[in-house]
Every structure is written in C-alpha cells, then in structure tokens.
Image (cartoon, rainbow, N blue to C red; front, side):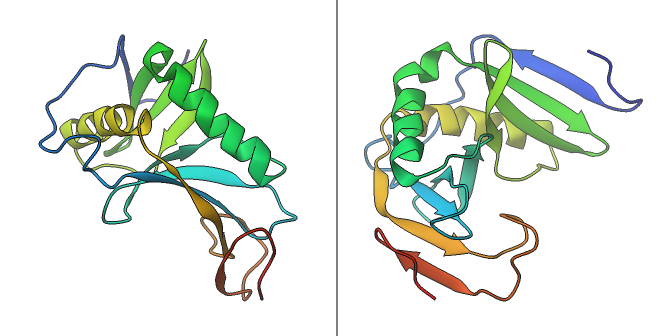
Length: 162
C-alpha cells in the first residue's frame, strides 16, 4: 500500500490490550443504529456510557434488521479482526479489518497516537458485550449524510418521525 508523504500506517496484530479502568459490564457502552430516515441506508455506532462515539460501521445497511445482524456478527467475530491505525497529517485514526476489508472505523480523529490506540482498544473491549438500543436515531447532520439539511432530529422505534 502506498501512503502520501507524511502519512504512516500502524498494524496491530492482534489488537494490543491497554488496561481500561472500568469493566465492560458497567461501562454503559451501547450500539445505536442511525440514519437520515428509515428509508435511507442505516449504520451502527458504538457509544460510550456518556454517549460519545467510539466507533462506527464502514458499511451502510438497507434496514434495521440487517444493521442489527451486522452488529451481532461483529460481536461474534470481534477477536478475529485486525486493528490498523493510520496517521494522516497531524492526526490519527483507526480501523478494524476483516481479511483486509474495513468493517469498523473510529468515530473521529485523534491528536495523539496513544489516544487513538486507547480508543481502538476500548472499542474492542466494549463492543463484544454492548447491547443494541431498540430505537433508531434519525438526523440530517452533515457528518451522517450530505444533502438532507434542515430535517431536524428524531428518535423512532419502527417508523419515521418528522
């Protein structure tokens, strides 16, 4: 793989364990399914106990059942994924790969390599036991989807809200 000048790639096999202070059971981490509408592609993300995004799916899914099944498949195979950290410019990001194919990506970039590495480890530690919320988060925020500005925000369970 060729990287632009100034970029670097760090592959962790297996994902190295960095101690985390709280247990997975008490962490409050949970998966949330989100999208612009129930008719648009959906994705999942893992949120920490204080609702900060830890990581999200790379793929989009046609409906909530398929998205939930992808979360279950991720949880079943989390130990077989390969962690990769990449430095782009002055920031770090991470991904989890399944046979070289990105499955999970970091929720945001990190200013330091150690913070990126800890976030990757935190995701792996939390994802295997985190429940999936029953509601779907609907939002037109630009980071989720382009071209849907002005729709607002809604949480629904099985049907779309304005």
